[in-house]
Length: 299
Ligand SMILES: Nc1nc2c([nH]c(=O)n2[C@H]2C[C@H](O)[C@@H](COP(=O)(O)OP(=O)(O)OP(=O)(O)O)O2)c(=O)[nH]1
Image 1: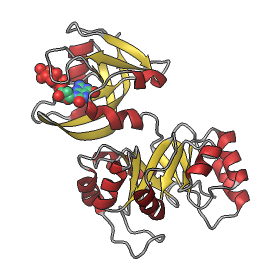
Image 2: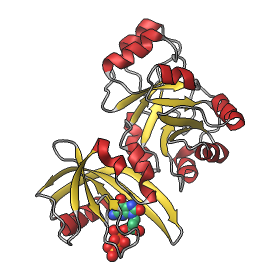
Image 3: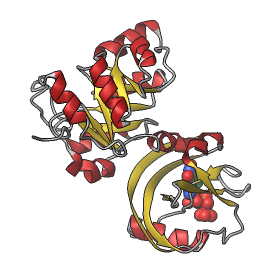
Image 4: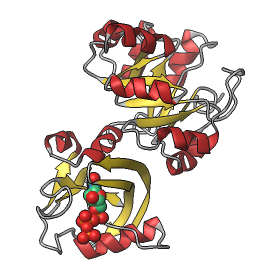
């Protein structure tokens, strides 16, 4: 149970674990253990009061990480703090610092935190522009997306200069499909490997791309392959039945949860989901929701 606490300048609060404790000397998001029967929001409010002297802490789910250290298996519920009062200080003598997001990667965190560091760079919604639209309609739709909370996967629209220009003009992070060279040339935020791209990467090695590497997964074998390639994120689908892939058996939320458990990737739930499913997705191990129909601006 740990809190991602932003300040007004969007810096995040970190504390350093005491040397003698598990993962000692490393930086952490402040938090502690949930007591039996305690609700997660309550547990975090209690811990942040005890450790940092904060009051009135309110929080929402961010990411659940299940990680096996050689000596300990942990389930860590990271929550995003949305409100609090008080000035954070180390009440137990621990060093506390406010760190700009861009500087987080320079800090040494416990291994379990890797997907959190990735998720902090990612939007909770991953929008796939419909392929049946014409280019003008796609450009118009992109102008209506919110760059703070939405990223774009150019599934059928990679390599269309007007579309990438529209993403850039709107400040949207965008992912190119399969082609690492194109992703590099266009300055894409991410490269997303389809089934075909994944198979090629397995034959020829990980694509040469500096940005974020993403993989389309449907089963445990593909998740393992994504991990072996060093991928940062993955879509996992279909959660529900969708018209795009009528033949695929839906995973359901429990099936989704079982597949993601213990994997150090940031997962997006894909297939018949929309923004209204974000809380459910987060309760089942996802960080975000991805989709075509459920996320593309209407009308
Ligand atoms: N609070 C927190 N714990 C983390 C993070 N990353 C990470 O791997 N952990 C691990 C370290 C511990 O093994 C475990 C939980 O730590 P904890 O703070 O609840 O408990 P603790 O080891 O300090 O022991 P104690 O307070 O109960 O004495 O989670 C993180 O970002 N924040």
